[in-house]
Structure formats: structure tokens, C-alpha cells
Length: 394
Image (cartoon, rainbow, N blue to C red):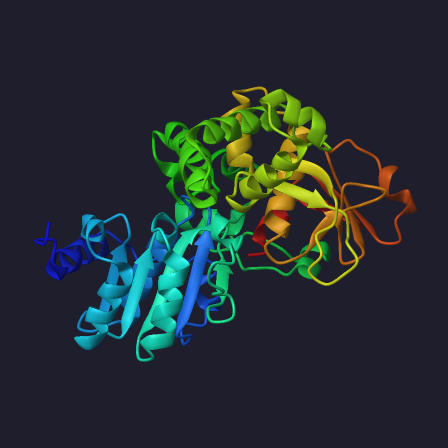
């Protein structure tokens, strides 16, 4: 198999670069400190990590000292990642981009070795957000910061799909009714389309529903089991758990009852939910825990985003669930969102109640500082804010 030499990797990189557009950069592009000798870009399947790496190469690198590889390439059937890095470095290589790193067994150990023994090489790796669960075998976190990339905001969807450039707003600006979409009088039709197919960059594809279904299946049956050394049978259980979650969400989880439904112990259910959350399948709304970095108790389990919700609900989606899912999904990128004792959500001491346009203010009457987040309204007033506006924050 030795004919898979490095020229094949360069051919592969060139093909990938030719297919990438550099018209629009995702929100995280400018937040990454590319001067780091090593860094990770993690995120769920399908949110655009590969495109971001290829854009970076196209705009800032010379192909003389840069190489992009995917660990799924045949080359790695009989070459190690570290050997490639060493050979590349010896030949004057400076920037190595490694995609799909979670598919490579022993990835963290070899990356650590590169960091320690190839000081002139910058290594950027991308992979599933399940990698955020460090498995301790080699502590990379001190060497390489990890950036978590989420799917598209409503703002990014407007730019990529419709060429509409809305300014990014802070939460304060949204609450002061300062958010707007230039040239768009009626945001709701665009917003409704976003909820169904705007979160993933491939949402404009004709076969989007089928493709998203494949993303969900592969995440649950391949990515998580591969990472957590689970059997194929466990992968199928994850898929069953996802099906159960999709009919119940949002719900307060009863670990024992969920466990009995898919025939695993309640302790396993907590692990499974954490893996599914990290992989971008579900989102867990927690109480505001005390200590630094402490995770509060899970108060409610949601599906991760509204595109998954529509995909799995097959026309039976609950609109209240859609609203809450969207709000939680968009706000968690810039803020710590926790469960509210008196309403739906709390962010920095502010209380938020997601509701339809006819709902009164009863829920948040007790809140010191409360806001009603309403769907189906174009503009807000006082403490009533349109739901779509929260999609302009990243």
C-alpha cells in the first residue's frame, strides 16, 4: 500500500480547496487565535468546520508550507499521523490542518507528541464536539485551546442564503429593541424558513431532510460509539433514546424510566445524554450550579436545534417547543443559559418567558427583571421582544 505517498495528500487538498467559497466567514472565524501552535475546532457534524479550515488556508497560507489532511484518507491505512507530521516538518512544512481527528485512534497522544517534539509546526485539528469530553489518555487541553463551533445563527442564515447583511447585536441591544434586518420589512417568513432548514450550512440542498437524517444517524451510530468505545448495539440504543427524547422534549428527565425503556442502567443514561449533548443532538438546560465549572442538575432536555426538531417530529411539532428550543440554542453561544425557577430561562439574572403573541405577562410578574419573548410579532415594545431578534447575536 506504499503508493499512497504524500503527493496524493496534496492532490486531495487541492481538490478540496477548489470547491470552497470564501464569500462568507462564520462567526467563529475571527475569534480563533491562529497564532497558537496547536488548536482544536470542534463542533457537531455538518456545521461547517471543514469549510472554515479550507477558507483559512486559501486566504492566509502558501501551499509551499501548508498541508490539509483528513484522517479518513487511505494514506492513514498504513501511515501514522505523527509520522506524516514529522516528515512534513522535515521538508519545511509549517502548518498542518488535520480534519476528522476523532476518527483516528490515539489522536490525542499523537497530537501531544507533535506539540512536544515538533516545535516549528503549527497543528490545527478539527473534529466532533464529543472530543470535548477529554478521555484523559493524554492531556491536550493545556497545550491546545479548543473552539466550539455551533450551527448557523439566524443572522448568518440571512447572509449566506439571502445576501442580507444584518448587524450582529448584543443581548442588551436586542432587549433595547435596537436590532434590525436592513431592507427587510417582514422578517417572519424568513425566520420560519430558518427554523426548518437554516441552522445547517447544507440546508438549501433539495435533499436536506434526508441528509440531516443521515447526520443524526451517523452521529449516534458511528461518532459517539467510536469515541466512547461502545458496541454497535449501544449505538442503536442511542438512536432509540434519541427517538424517545424527540417525542418528549422538552422534559425533565427521569433517568430510571428512560433506562428501563432502552434497557440500560440509569447511570448509563446520564452518560449517554452527555455524549448526545456534546455531539450536538440534544441540549440540557441545567440549574445554576454553585462552584466554578460545576454543572447544575439537568432541569429539562431539549433537542439541540429547531432543524433537528422539525426533522424528527414529522409534522407534529409543538410550537411552544420550537420557540424554547430556538431561544436556548441561539443564546447559549454567547451566554450561560440556565433554568429559571419562575419561568423558562435565566441569563445573568434576567428572566425570559418564551410565548406566542397572545400570551399575557403573568409568568414573569414575580421577576425582578423579566422579558416576554414572543413569536409571530415583527417588533417589540417595553419588555416584549420578538423571538427572531435573538437570532442576531452571533
